[in-house]
Length: 120
Image 1: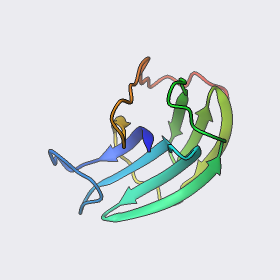
Image 2: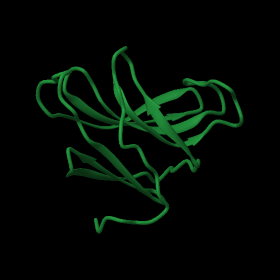
Image 3: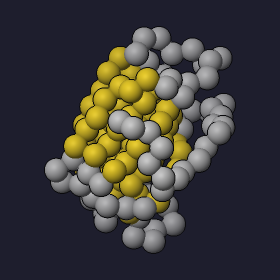
């Protein structure tokens, strides 16, 4: 699975996975063509949403976008709004990054902003 990690609260650990006192969200595109939104909360991996978007082609570029507004998570896939999710048990963290599950994956045009640029 390749995608965005956000809302990360790592409690100053140098490395993390689904470890104690680690909290974050992720929005991934899997190599099986499935979009997934999930959450890691203190050793627990919690799926929040998934949807098949068809076959995955490693030669193509895919655009993933996440907007985080308090406990509202808005996700886009290839510039199309896919879904919105409200987490009533929101875990607040300020770090973000990318993660890949296979070699050869590249990321480009990465940016983060505190400006709410999209009207959704």
